[in-house]
Image 1 (cartoon, rainbow, N blue to C red):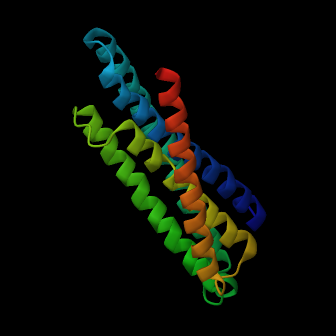
Image 2 (image 1 turned 90 degrees about the vertical axis):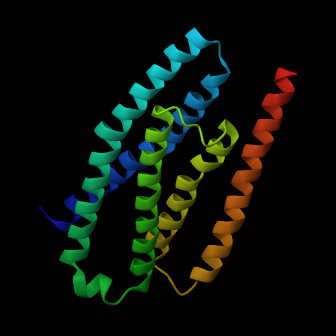
Amino acid sequence: MEYNHIKAIHIIFVVSWFAGLFYLPRLLVYHTEANDKPALERDIIQAQFAKMEKILFNAIMVPAMWLTLLTGLTLVYWNWWDTFAQHTWLHLKLTFVFGLLVYHFACRRLIQEVRAGKFRFTGFQLRLYNEIATIFLFAIVFLVVLKNAVDWIWGVVGLLVFALVIMSAVRLAKNRREKKVS
């Protein structure tokens, strides 16, 4: 296999991993909000969400994460002196990837808590939590495409503004849902 084949495979598994990282917190939102249903309906719905969360995490997210890491490390290894040693953007990208790994395992912990009947977050808080993966995605893609860590301060400022916009959009959507219910 050559470099571009590995790069293509890497991108495919990044997309798969992010699909799971976007979908899992949404399942946790619905799982949590099922607490407001009558007991029989709640139990049936929560059992189904627990099954979906387990399959999503174990069958899609974990393999995609490992294959993303494996192919990414292969790409770095093949171009060690050309990429890693000389390009600070890659160091910053790998820092964000580490943060993404922390987020991934935090999602696993949330699954375990919800499965055990511990609902630490409200549906709204989980909707906000769901946007963390989006913030990581933007940061990583911009670093990879622009390959510039010199302007990382502006990138962080932009990322914070982007995060505020996302959080505001979630809040607006919540307000609209509550108005429709009333």
